[in-house]
Length: 232
Image (cartoon, rainbow, N blue to C red; front, top):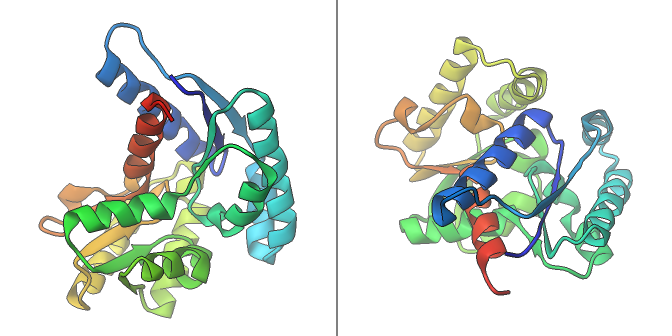
């Protein structure tokens, strides 16, 4: 089995979910007491949150690149960053390492292709919904990407940072997300990308029957496990 280098801590809520899911999936596939070979760098989310708010992307990139180099030195055969937002600095991370980097947006694009849809609604932090690094990557893969109206984008972002990353899951926020997803569906979205790794802890498929959800956490975890179990 190849050793996973997991770059996370963004937030610790999602990190716990990633770690559990990766190990449970390996055990499901291999049985017995089998678990993943994994090295984890759990970063200070306070640094990340400040960089995102200040748009200090150079600082964020150097910070995460250093952590990725540490994972490689610790024996990681490839790197997976469990934050959609911080793929904003993926090129800096990739330039800092010599092992492969598993890009979360590419995993989502592959799943959308397999689903046979072309119009995607995108939820996530403000940078993920608004900047080219994520939605542009999906568009270049052939998808039309729809995002909420500006006031709803601000609300979706606020719920992520003020609630989900603090392990707060309010029924009112769930209803807000359901409404926003329903609005995107009415605007033409054939599926919704949950482009933040905490969102699946708030809403799930049962909340929007008949509307496919492309959950970045589930998809990225599966791709990470399959990469770890491949021969490379």
